[in-house]
Length: 336
Image (tube, rainbow, N blue to C red):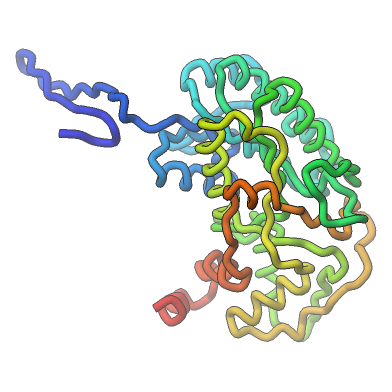
């Protein structure tokens, strides 16, 4: 009788039957995912788990019974976590990723994006785990795209600066680590407001006499978290066999779109009107500055056969948004 990589045997004692599990060598490698309650973290956990890995996820405010609660800014807590679970790989997804929030709560955000990353990197090196640190295209200023891994960063806002500092701490304290830079993400959301991409759905659905201006200036490359998760798994599997897989990598969706174009694509995918959506060709005042076009050159991943071919945005976003349609029967008519 076997289950999940472990042999089970019944041990009889007077009046008691105990089930004892003995771990066997066939057990899968262990991965620890920080920020497992978040948009990307959930996708990463799912991807590794469905490919035979033993997954441990951590969260903080949203930690649930299936995730461990860990304050990543507490060095002792991080040390105990890694000593107890002894991961082979750590995928560090936890971060404050909202540029405008970062500007308002700088100390707390830097504590998570920089100081917690330093701790995770240091302890990963101590326990010998491969560390994959998730970074961002916002380390670039957007003036001269596309950007390769060796191009000089020049972040325009605190979010970009904090993630760049996190990269530097990662490579300083854990030289064998992998940095994966990705652009704006969308995926299977618990709420449409969880992603800057899916949050557009609220304005798409509100087809009233009122018009909604949407940014039609900043060029973005919306990227599916499921694809990022697959790239993380491929990097982890290859890097465990090949120590030359280290340093900085880029991964991105391939379709260049403004927020206005994303919203129109959503409306078209669901056969909804879009004439209430108005393209805004000037950057809004008062928000954190963002790069005009921080397109990433992803050729390093592609040359190593570690990339994935993204689905068309219209197809991928439809799969993510159909649970939030008014008519739940919609999926049956489209997918069957």
